Length: 148
Length: 399
Image 1 (cartoon, rainbow over the protein chains, first blue to last red):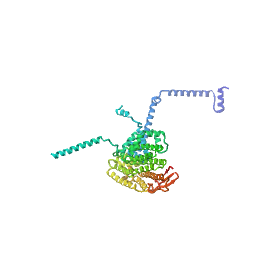
Image 2: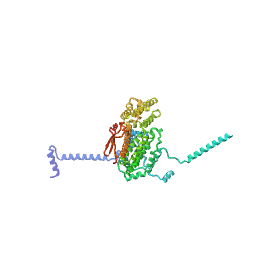
Image 3: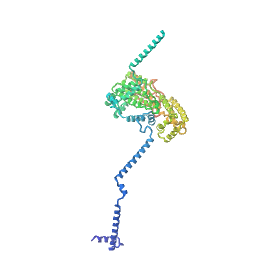
């Protein structure tokens, strides 16, 4: 059995109210071509250069957008950390070792966390001061004084 | 004419003597410094900076938590000059760290931590000496540490006093651990008794730093200086309370002569009450200080006169408790030394505590004495109200 006859038989059995024939075939074919023409026309209209699309798809635009995101995130982080620092006590905020070892700073540390907090603060201050040389010979001292 | 010649001769002789005396002064060999702080500063400079591992090992050894190790012994030996300077300095009666008082709260106290580091080194040396069997020198080192701690408070800020109390505890702990290993000879223990008794003249009552702290606070209660308190608001009392910081800041910014005077009057009364409370027996004093510490903060919102006291006045119940605890520990040690001397003399511990020994400061009474097979316990009769416990000190005795 041929494919056309099979299709006609299938339609007649499943859709008895549908009338098949050469007129119907012609109409379907006409509709199909009309739909095809419409699709081809739409595609060719889309293919025209779009300024917005060009800008969006540009590499420079992508880099600029990434830069803006980075700047915004950085600004947000900075603001959050600034707010946190504003809310901190003097002993918690970043200070120089000298400031960490003042009468006031050590008193604040003691009042807030007892002796352990004083110990912690002093440790931090001396860590910030950095390691000292284990020994200094007279030659090294002379070199220091002579600026060499 | 004769009189004139005589006067000229006397004046000339006087000039010659002055010149000779000044030359002698210049030529005289200069004496050692009489200020212990100068030697301590040299010791700080000569102390080798330990790395993190060594720092931890030193801490552990000074607390007796690890045995003596060859590496620690070498490190301590490499700091011998710093230790010798610390020992020499600790024996000197006078110590002035040169704290710049005129800077008020901004004055730096960098030596405080250096003292603590030096203490660690000397205590490690004490443990090493004890390990080698030189108990007398080891105990001497512990006494040196106690002196060093009290020198640390020579400039009397309250914070230095607290550090000195902590140092005293570390030194006492070291003595308590070395004593049982000491052979039962009277000489070593009697020498320790003598040196511990010497320390009595060095210790400073809590009233001294408290009075110093009060003077320091009062200096800021003037129109000129009151604004300098603003950066301290959060750290000093109101860390958790932004609303109170805001109220205090507004009041301080609007402060005039009257505000400062009224606040000063309020503070003076508060300070006098604190000083008076320190003379009360322990339980009453602790309760009173706790109440006094809270009262300016309780009144703060409704009474602007309490503003500066609420911000600046320290709550002293903790410092007081710490001081009573440390003094009790030191007294227990002195009482124990008497018992060790009796044990060395009679080859046995007494059945009861001899009369007249240093007391438990929590109760103001003698320690409770409990004899054991391998030593004895000295137990406090009064409760530590802050830690809510009865302290006891155990001492082993070498047979």
